[in-house]
Length: 466
Image (tube, rainbow, N blue to C red; front, side, top):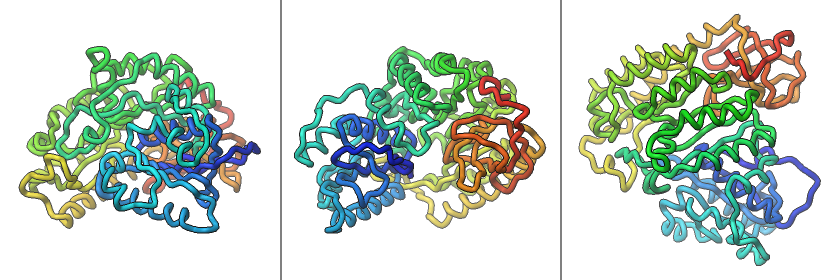
């Protein structure tokens, strides 16, 4: 869950009416929420951090899998109860995003408390929709997404981090996935538009840019005829040597030698990549609609670790896909044991209406899926703990994410994505603000996180992260 106005501060400016916007789901949804909030702020609406104080409540939903859809429904019903409270000022409840795109008519019928149900393609008109419901004048002409988004930056939870959506939609046609049906075909943004947004984010105080898409490795194929991610990475990195650049969601089948070389060459690009492989066994990958193989994955991983020393590899795996046998799972388990991923998430397959996988024979029982997930997570927990313990005594760069009331701090290494991976707990000997990058000597580690002491005599150079 990403509450866009969770850290909204009292800025002493009064707008009318007030709006509470809550975003669920992925980083791409987070960007959409910021864009909507920015447009509303520019139109004169005032963000608030408490739904009970809002004239307008907007829920930006996720509908990727059943669990996400249920979370969205539960959240909407919670917001509807606030609207129904006679003491609350709420006059409008608006549902937007992936769930309402996927189940628009069902949402309208089952949640009559909603004053508007919008899909992901309707968010550009959020100001017009809200204004009409509230009976006030509003600008119906949306401006460039990234320009409107800047108005929301002071209201976001971590303003020193900027997520940049470089494309929308997907063409990969994985048999288990609903994204193409929800968001449409893969559509890259122009490089110029992306760079302009990055410049604006850096100017607003962002110290870490996170490039996101359904598959970042395919960036530019639709616009320029071939992947332009390596070129884009070099251009973004050149904007500011003092800003970290992080790459998420690059499918391994589409990672190129140019991209690997760019990551190796650029000191302010985090030595970290999230590449969702889903499985290691070719027979399962084929049914998933993926073109990879265990041999190809092993070769890619060896290549990346050789050319980008110290790189942290994050992946996600799916267990219990239709037809997954005991032998298939054993192969996956052995693969994880061999590769020793730095970061790993495991999810049971979710049978989604409208996907080819939902109609496949030999659906795996839920209890079997959860047993397999737990086995893999226990293995990964041991691997992760060993890797964390190996960092004790080392001095590494840490970006500060949070300054706690007791004077201590919470941050991350370049090997950890915000709200996804591990954190570093720092002592109270330093005076820093969120977004500062400092040298930290790691003094301890538990099964997940690190603990450290600032090394003030070693001022961190954000352009030299190794």
